[in-house]
Length: 92
Length: 195
Image (cartoon, rainbow over all chains, first blue to last red; front, top):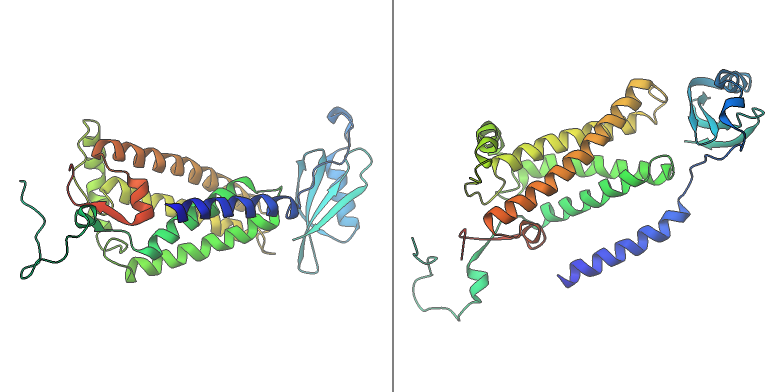
């Protein structure tokens, strides 16, 4: 049982240190009220203009998250619904 | 009914610890490691989507690896790890669950019929969740709605089934007066229902 307890403690330590280091989410793009957001379709258009094949988009936190494919690679593009500026890009 | 555990003939060996002679090895070491590693990975996976996508992905691949190992171990493992009895147990499951309402549990050393049913359903849900998760990061299925929906639903199903699994183990531990969680750590179970 002592081995089990030690394993659980060690695992918790590893998980907590790894937690912050591996955070790669993104969700803060604007403080603007949702009612005055620009339509999501415009974010998709911007992604298309930038050369991405748009698969879908959704709201992630206060961002428009656009799923795009470019040159066989997967990207998540985060646009601000306030001015449609590109805030962040995650290559999958 | 009170006949003792058969003892070796000839010169009696040095008195073995009483507890050791009254328990039997059920879960082999690879199965136990598999069980707890899978539990940890599922727990991590549950708390990591969107916030820790990189970690979530690695953990998902780990789950697929563990599921493949379980298939292999279902053929090569020790007696209670093998899937040989699974068909018979599954057929007995409906009646078994129905009898449980009166607290009738029967006595199984390995998985009882309800446990066998949980094994199959939980691992199926987990397989669907892990496979659709892996699919969603391929060029073909990236951002495809039904892949994401299936991943979300099957993942929720996994968590519900895990909760049911834990509840079932606790219930069975109480009804049979045997700590089944400890059995999955030590690998041993008592030979008789009540000491």
